[in-house]
Length: 323
Image (cartoon, rainbow, N blue to C red; front, side, top):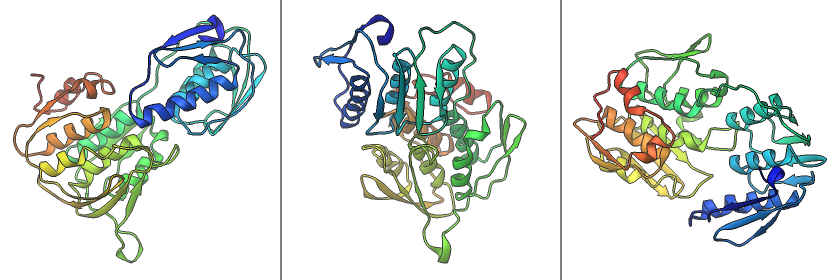
């Protein structure tokens, strides 16, 4: 939009450190293209003409990458975007833009080359499956000892998740575009060489996504054995752990970024507050396998990433209702 209309006004970012850091990455990319940014509340972005250039992002941010790509496709000349995020939704955006007339090379890698074009055309596009939602349903099926077929699951995006969940004793099969989680699952944590406690950590794509960590932690509470989780990418991502401990989970917080989970544990129902999208979904999965009736508040956080989640779970046999 900035490349086409020349001026945008944006609201201020959230006050958290992560939000400000991501914003700095956005500013770095847009200023490199020739954008002038003024003010802080709100932000005013102006540019008479964006010019392609060589950009090195200081963080492989998904949103910063997407914004830089969208600004570059109509910029004059060629833009090289290094340290770009390459998650499936970034790839889908690039493929969508190419289908509309953009010229983006290097899709799925961490270096994108964008040759600016004068205009884009309209068209029809079907949004692909959300790999994070797919993994959430896999985790829910495993901890409730159920079985599930997830249609149109884009299993080719789940190879790292498949490796990690196999270490927790959870496997699945693929049939055409579907994923099938059968029962029973072993739910036994596989130790490292010489019976060393295994470590699961996150990393930029194609590593294990940070957004899957909370789901994996809840699943680990129902698995036989001990595992160390190391959240490397974001602050405050493990702050929901105290809620799991309140439900009876055996988890030791080593520091704000690491925790040790020992299972299996019979979780007890609790009144919970959803702190964010992924932690909220993790708590919902914990409530599904807990004894008793749990209440989850602030569910709008969950619904930001999981549309109609209560209806989907109810169709699978969950006893869940919106109060």
